[in-house]
Image (cartoon, rainbow, N blue to C red; front, side):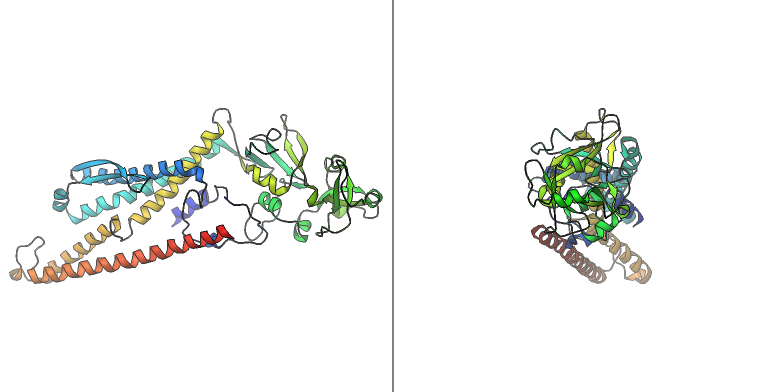
Length: 432
């Protein structure tokens, strides 16, 4: 379990959500699931389908290679190997072993061949995790303490051409990333929380920074509606959109340094923020000389979130490793790790056509052999395959079959219940 927990912590949040929704106090039903389906186009982006298919083929090939290596070590001939369509469009690898040789080896050797596939899957996941952990520090630099690195900008948006990939954004409006605000119960990143959630009193108390304007100018500028290039501002302390407002040229206010509103002389000045209906956002970023620069965008916060993807890591060598290569390699690696662990665990379940069912049969045969070796008198034995009398052989073969069927039915029921419930909750979340 410690290995699985480590893998989960390394690769838990990597894919962007498909649907845009508010993150105010909403907790998805599927967030607490232990089993979450990986379905490109539904729970993961459809663009990941090629990477998913390649990862699935690689994982299954490594799994079958494990069976083949173990078979060679046990002197079992390999009849054939190849690739076939396991599903209508997903290829799968297979290895066919000599049944005659399998029947002549010991049950322990047979069990070793059965378990080799899952063992190689877990080994692959562990090795890739170590490689990813080692090379992560060589390829990426953590910038979450002071900003967010732009990973992509939608070409059809107005942001394209103003903000470029690998740009380090240091602030949004009066929010700076140098001091991390306390996370809420849902553990939502400050970037997502600020751009998708309305500002409430709790947010104001945690980040009391805004722009200070002269109080008399604010009172005299209470025009009600923006004119020309002006934008309306409201007092920062209020969460009501119908409160008093004043309209100013946004560059004269928002391109200035922010002020700690707790230390402001309220008789002379007032802290303000843009009215949400003005759709004015200030973006602070590091320029070519690593100097703080700012631009104003005519954009809503949600539009900015939809068209600007960011990360807490930035590439150290963007010219040597292009963005598309790093993204594709990272996606492939994550899918292989997740599918390797899943493939290994599922294959060891006692379900028909899987390795676990065959392993159970080998285990039952081993227990029967030990049982008869102790309790059956030698003069009652008839020379059968395992030295049982005919009546006892039929009796215990029947027990073996019934035990296998019960285990298969019980495990299959639990698996269908878990996967069915997970898919149902994911469907409910996607329609909310």
